Image (cartoon, rainbow, N blue to C red):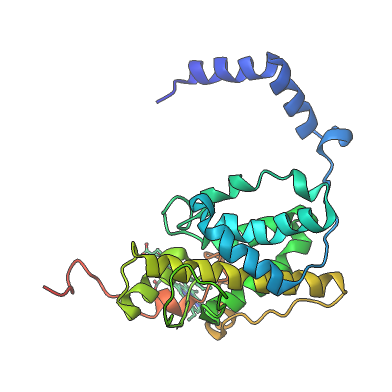
Length: 260
Ligand code: HEC
Ligand code: HEC
């Protein structure tokens, strides 16, 4: 535990520190350094980007998030140069396995959303992210078929059901019998990364053309949100995920009800 005295000392240390002082000042609205600054979005060829993403997945073990970012921003760098070619793409490797194997948000989705964040402010990004995430939840993946697969196999598709890496991946692994640590499973994720890149670029292209993104939230989400959303009678949940996937009672108590 940090004592109140230590906390105060730490805090005042921050205020007098030169660099920290500058950050505090800019957070207060020093317009020149803290004003939102976005890169112009560019149209790309979705299939070309998907192919780059597929290969990116396997490059130095970059994983799904790096793959998607390379497929989108790396590709913009190749086609349009600066500022896109200045981005340190490798930072996106953190997203693999739903962030360092925590199984939270699918890394491919995470990094596509991050790419949108380079071009649009928080309010404008939302419809693009909604469109991508709601598509992913319902889609049978993977669909991308590489010309030169790293692992040659007849890959079974499953509905991902959830934007969570854990659920999406575990359902696929359980249904197909391929271990999560297998090469086959990585092949699946590399193709899913290509699918997400393809879709993310399609959505971006459409928005650049001036078309609003298509969003179809689950029926459960729409129904539950009539009461469980901002300003409604049970404003105690914030998510756009499909509620039924977890709240329907199908996920039984495995501490009690488990195969012996
Ligand atoms: C007609 C309004 C309404 C709708 C529609 C609705 N809820 Fe609720 N829900 C409530 C209210 C009111 C509570 C109680 C909140 C409280 O205690 O403060 C509640 C409580 C809950 C709780 C916590 C209590 C418990 O039983 O576990 C969960 C979880 C929940 N709702 C999930 C859902 C889901 C999932 C849906 C859609 C399938 C849904 N709700 C649809 C009004 C609604
Ligand atoms: C990925 C799984 C998942 C999804 C999808 C999900 N929830 Fe939950 N939700 C949970 C978990 C886990 C808790 C914590 C439950 C607990 O502690 O008993 C929770 C808690 C809640 C609670 C607080 C009451 C309680 O039972 O603790 C409400 C209300 C709720 N969820 C509503 C919703 C609604 C509405 C949706 C869809 C818009 C939704 N949830 C989607 C997993 C999910």
